[in-house]
Image (tube, rainbow over the protein chains, first blue to last red):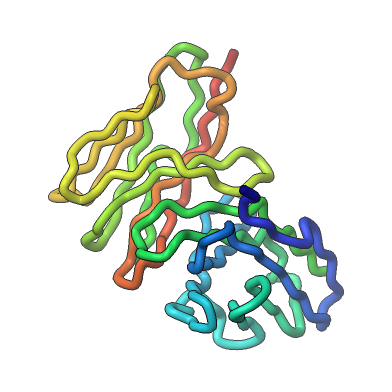
Length: 114
Length: 110
């Protein structure tokens, strides 16, 4: 049973380019969460999605960031017109339906903006 | 912010000693979880304690929860070098989202 898969592992973008981060949840999991982690810091909640639905995006910056979790395929976190401050590790986690279950994390995508 | 706060920020102990780290949070919860993160990797779930529980054990881990003080502690007994990692507490929000603390960085010296 494959765990949460994130790709790419490392992503380098120049300022102004777009970054697309992908997350395939564990089989049977319909809830996806995205977190951002800066070096030596904790995880900041960004967005919580269920299939075709954004449940809570209170942690998402108002501009340039968007997330989706379509009926088929992985969840995508999209950052448009990246800036140096977007450089961070982005983690995806998934959980089964029902809520209040432990999260299963991927190994993250490390985004570097040059 | 609903985010928890772990204390201490960093902890260094000798192998075989016990390690205790604390978590404080701000709002009411349904459950609290502890996770571990090795350098460069994703988080791994360790233990979940529900709001109506006061203590829970799992192997060398012991977690306590005091909802009146909005705090939890994680005790790792007989620590090993392999326990070196960052440890985070997570609390659930009103919509089943999860908020993580700032973490305790534990170093176990062989």
